Length: 393
Image 1 (tube, rainbow, N blue to C red):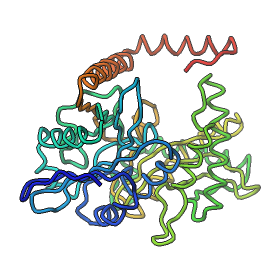
Image 2: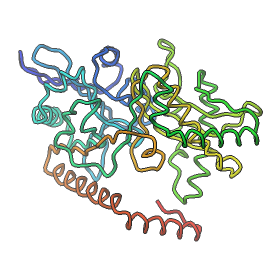
Image 3: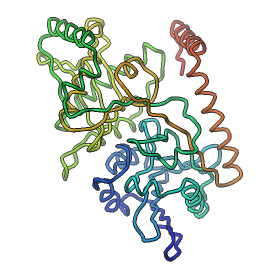
């Protein structure tokens, strides 16, 4: 642990392993006043960090002048272009990279310029050239994120849905009467073809493994059709997801919750949804459906999503989000756009150059994604590459 200390002044502690900070971390996340996303839960971060054991870990704990924890930021530090770059743990598998704040009040008390200076001070002691904090929500659950206040817009935003205490009322708000009627008709056709179907949430490690196994098969088929490299082919990523989906022996809960639409005859898995969870939110990480035309024509993913929303509302969660990136099912379902930003904190001169490149790249990607003509052109190029038997990243 490295610590810059000054009596009655705010302090910043830096831990290089999870065990040293686990007790504090779990205490913060179990407090009802905590202000955080599901991706900064200890179990989620621990599962991801274990999949990359060769990457240096740094957990920054910011305390106020009275010694009370204000924020915790879990990072991995890796070499990029010869520089030591710190990023919030989770990479593309975390929709949100916001710090864990002890409370809304603690977040409000942290002025962005003070937060940045404290991170720079810690970085100088540890040889970090730059912090690259992507996917920072500008606002979270109605309150400002200090790391998002001066952020550059991310290439894509995320999409969320507020859940109500009445599950039926929530579904009626999300899906029109016509949409619900169409989904009932599609589910009926699925039942006629394959027998009874049911919504299931993995309650055991064996169930999670079965549903995730189906997900990997379905996703591989989908990526092959699109001519896109399959990130889930990486054994380390599969190990991370499996670890996150295991239920903690103390709490009985998993950091990643896996749900599926299954056939009761033959146990066929028609669609899968998995997300990071905490007490208040389900945050969608990945989804797939059976590519067989006899199944896909019944929209099993949409059927599963309807069941998922009902289940989360019934269980008392207040919000559900479908992650970062543009997709029809997200805009059709969600009533909130979660604006995201890219925050870079350069420490050294090379770090400043890295930050300029990062911001420039993010701006270019955002322009492309916001231009329908360019996106249509990219789509045509992908289809042409597929036709030629090549992959297009």
